[in-house]
Amino acid sequence: MTNLFVLYQWTILAGGLAAVSLALLGAQLATRDRSMQTMCVGQGAMVGVLLALGVLPEIGIEHSDLIPFLAAFGVSAATFLFTDNLAVARMASRNTAFAYTFAVLLAVGYLLSSLFPALESHMAQVYFGDLATLTNHESIATAVASLLFSTILVLGWRKWSHQSFECALFGEGSALRQSPGRMTAFRFLTLSMLCVSVQFLGFLFTISLLFLPTGILSRMRTKGLALHLTLCASVSLVASVSGFLLSLNYTRLPTVPTIAICLTLLSGAVLGVERLVARPARRRADALVPVEAEA
Image 1 (tube, helix red, strand yellow):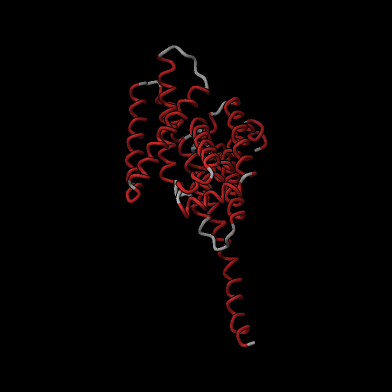
Image 2 (image 1 turned 180 degrees about the vertical axis):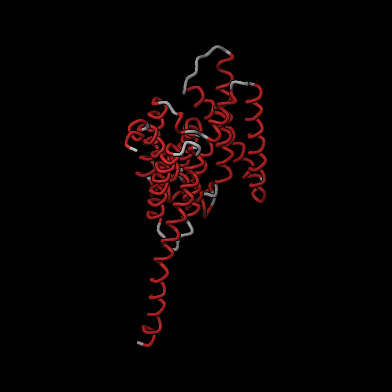
């Protein structure tokens, strides 16, 4: 086990930091009811990466990480603007609009892989992800970017959360009118995180870490935003590291699906323990009510 830590130290660090940053971002996006739109934007980032990886060799440009990121950012930004206009124009059926947008982008991704045969291996990598194949350079780049994203989200968690609740209560239009700079900064941060994560860690890793922890842990009876964010980040970090090491020990297990299943089980275990602990406390509180009433 020690040898695995040494051999994959940068990959483990990159996966853990990315898991934390995505979990913190996912809690904000879920509060804003942007889950389906985020899936479309993530799929748009995937199309941008595949487009760059397919076109670059055809025009004689050597592979680099910057051009696929810029392509992913451009396509995902266009997808965000398109879906945002759909959401405003058709509030009653916006999930349907997000669904058919996702389907079209998914078809475009597979079409690109067919047009450029060299993309077949990249298609599986970008969609399902495989942390074990990351180079040290890619792992360090992901770790640095994820650390920056996590720092921004942690230091500004109160203002991001206040903005998220304002969006949930009054809509993003109200938040945009009151603080356009902050809203633009959050959108830029979201797009950047999605593009980095999809490019290096895959679409499945990105979506799983965004919405699995906050979706499951939001069912806890013990409320508190700081507690929720802390648990989401902690569970995601543990699941990312343990799932990756488990897949290395059992080579037939794919890395990212294993991480997703570990995240689901661990989040469910935290939820179960919390309910077992909270139930006796609630019973004791209910038992004290008649006594206090008689007094």
